[in-house]
Image 1 (cartoon, one colour):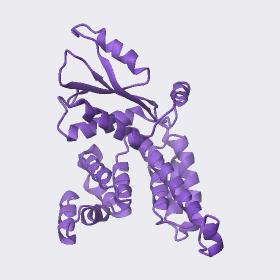
Image 2: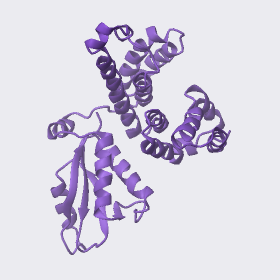
Image 3: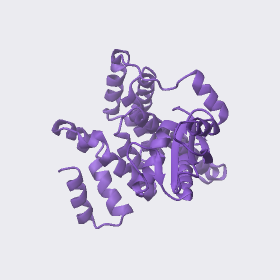
Image 4: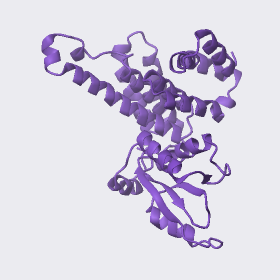
Length: 303
């Protein structure tokens, strides 16, 4: 899913100390030639590093965010960074690790069929989402979560961006072992352990993690910025402190967070309890005292 393409780092001898980090769905060398042919460019651009990833739109933002946070960005509306080349390359490698590598075949296929296309007609998916929401509120989570997932999946296919977020939330919930444990993994007998039951359980959770991350990437691509909070919570729970912090920062800088109204705050603070997740991150990952973590979280969320 997503828009496969290249993230690249270009250098130009005439622009000493500057690195251009951008995206393209064509060959990076071709892109370098296009830029070099522009008037006012005295020397050729050269490709210093490039990688084909699963979603170059999100990947470009991700790489820019890494470099901008380190103070390398020249201008907020330009793709040039006053940074050592290795810093740009490291940012691209980190982006590839997070977004995922794409093959040339996947890149070609994406030009034929655009996956996860958002449709404007909400009537196509509104009933599905309402029904899925009901299943998620029932006390029989183990029985109804699959029904909810199926309906969110169908709603997403019909163009509902929020449905990608909801799928991602459920999948990451399962991946952390917070949700149900399927019956085939519940027994802990020697027989099951000898024949790889623990490996099977790990595979089950890893599968959910991959699906969850992919769904949130699609939601973010289409502007559903609550996914930053879901990803931040997941990375915090899995002790990936750097990524957790980065995603909390992205959330707090997002339009969705800055422009939320008093009415919208009920959802932010209640349904998925992001405030508590942020407190836990500050206390457990950043080793703050619980009192200090609570103070900072309450200040951040205006409680």
